[in-house]
Amino acid sequence: MNNTSQPAAPSGLTPHPPPMRVLITADQLQKRVVELAAQIDTDFANETPVLIGLLKGSFIFLADLCRAMTIPHLVDFMAIAAYGGGTSPSGGVRLLKDLSVNITGRSAIVIEDIIDSGLTMAYIRRLLLARQPRRLAIATLLDKKSRRETDLPIEYVGFEIGGGFVVGYGLDLAERYRHLPHIAELDLTAAEEMSASE
Ligand code: IMP
Ligand code: MG
Image (tube, rainbow, N blue to C red):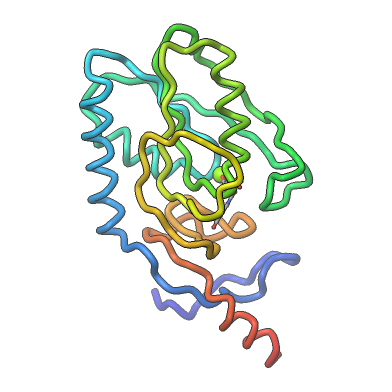
């Protein structure tokens, strides 16, 4: 396979891959995920927490995290969408798919790909706390901490990153690039230069 051969993009999506640079390598991701799993193993020893993956972005992180864990646990999923489908949920979020497991009286850990303003996670946290879990923790692979708009306790953070838009390891740009084994940051300056020269 050569890197320059790209399938044609469906109409409405970017016609060619936007310029990107690797921000976190696959090796760095794997090492950090193993560390987080060990921390969770220790913190939830003697419990059987439910890992709640938020679809779709967390699916690869969750898959690696749960396989690195050694304590018994359950896996379940929730899906939410920002109103309007944009990248910013300032207009609110709605529930697309609820859990199939009842978390009342159980320990639960929400597994997220990235926390930006924190508004999505604040909504999910309120929703889940209302079900009276025994304990609720939040784990996010990436944290754009400087962009937070609301106070949010986050127990497990993989990497704190800047404000740029990132893809890969589950994270997408218009549903693409989730399969990349690393986290890449879009190079917006280069993207602007490219579109200016078209
Ligand atoms: P928040 O509510 O502002 O914290 O937004 C969180 C959601 O926005 C994440 O679950 C992602 O779906 C999306 N998001 C925020 N930043 C990025 C990014 O850099 N790449 C891909 N998705 C992102
Ligand atoms: Mg997400």
